[in-house]
Length: 325
Image (cartoon, rainbow, N blue to C red; front, side, top):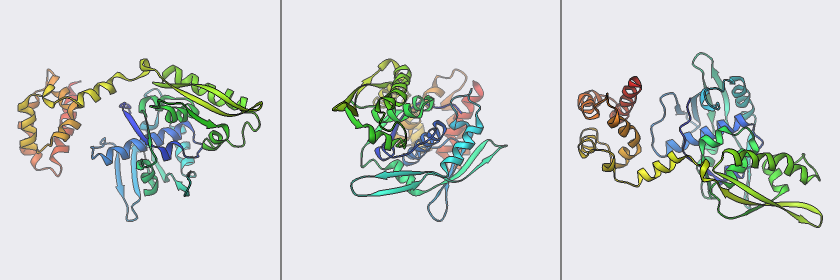
């Protein structure tokens, strides 16, 4: 499934948590963060995604396997299966000055081989961690994060994306966060060689944020690293900035007043709901083979019989445009 790029907002609880996940496990995590942020904003989910809750407030999530792959060329379903199996056995470990906690990520993963989707359960505590911004947050591009081949590139990207000031971490702290305490013992130069340098190389190549760094010594021993965030505008997805600019402009900049009024009066869309679907309406207006106003008027009675008229008309417009492609 194609990844629609956006800035993902990640709780610092997740960014700084102690865990050792594979690249595919991280991709599952990114998609879950994206999913629950959609839900909190009240945005409509892709029709192939479903979230239900049981009596114990546990979310039962169904998603296409393709959402966890790196583009259409990636057919490695077995890696997704392994990642789901591994995640079901793992925990987030979080600790601050007051609390220490282990939070399970997912449970009971199942793959439907015919439908090519997966279903699993996710505890409300991990959902809460996804959405808890009380400790701060980081913001990064979803597509960029999904494409990294190294889990260390992913972690450094999350830590440094959007940062403007230098950040220092002890090597021991980074090893604890990455759950590799037993590696590179008394060999900090190897930690830099095999963890930091390859991550920097991958970020330099494709991420809007990379870093420079200076090893900090105590005596002759390297004990920490000072990271200097580097913004690389040439690697920034311009469409995200365009969307931000678009949201700051009036709806009438892109849509005729007649269409805006028709959506409000006949489908009871709010200004915010039209804004959330602005790109779709613009695409419909700009399609030479599709008359949006006529379609809205034609489907008004039909939509009124549906449980969710607004969601139904949005999906109907999407289907019509897809057929015209």
